[in-house]
Image (cartoon, rainbow, N blue to C red; front, side, top):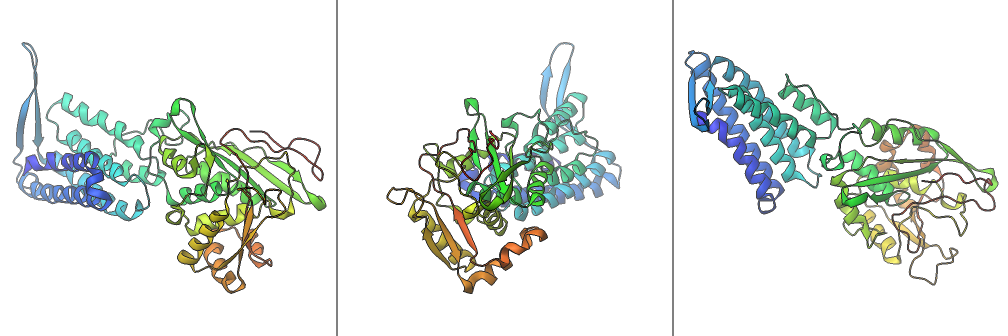
Length: 428
């Protein structure tokens, strides 16, 4: 029984990590969570046997170091202190496993997350049950190796309660972290903001040597409060610097004043899947698995981003936007998603005045039908600021898409034209 307490979490981590693809998400969740819960039940039994009767149990597994003057065994000891520490460690770990099944449901790296979570539990068990300082050192040093893998702040708070004596050396939002150390999981709200932005005005940039991907966020709106909220939300989650980006002013047709934010996220190796999803031959596209990621928050972000420019501000031929390469089938695909997922009916209108009507690529809009305006408003209204609710009361609600030909993930600049101020607005 006591040996099972040591082995079961490690087995769960092994099967989820090395056989995660065969087990699938549900299988990995079931295996790791079940084994940790069984370990918790065994620890409760051990508490009654050892803790209440004060009968310690010592298990010698094998000799680790066998020298003439040094003899170190890989052995564990279950005494009153050990079983008292195991109970909070394993009970909290079991609850974290159960909670993570729902909380991490939309994360693309579920098997890896649960493998790390079980491995973290195993290191904690080794730390509290080690019978010598060298084995205790293994548990002590194994914990900070695993912990940076969880770069969601809420996960940190839970894991800190499991490793109460450990000081966190490096935070997720520390600039000192390397991109390969930022690997997931990601908060669903953060992914929704990213996906909604990538559909319109933001883009991904590959770092040198393929070590990570960062996001270039370009937000344009007449609502400064929204721009500041967007940046502060990502900064608090640890995705970008907390230093506020420069707010630039854009003067459009009819002296319409818009404000532009541009800032970069940190580099993440776990954003490679986003790049593969949104890019083909370095050209940003509309992904064909978008229905999985177009959450209500992503739809609200898409709505606010698409209304930032639109026909209120017309850019010249030299102006480049971080837009998506668009074909007519893309708008039809988006229209089908809105209908099937949210029961929102739309009317497709292509931009025949863009000068690209005869080419493969063209811009366009999805107009929300009057019969679906109420449904659309109910979906996006909880996810937008109160100061932006007026946008839902404007006639002809629509989602604008700016088609460009050959736009890739290189640096982008806004260039002036007639109707704009004579200075360049900003350059990434």
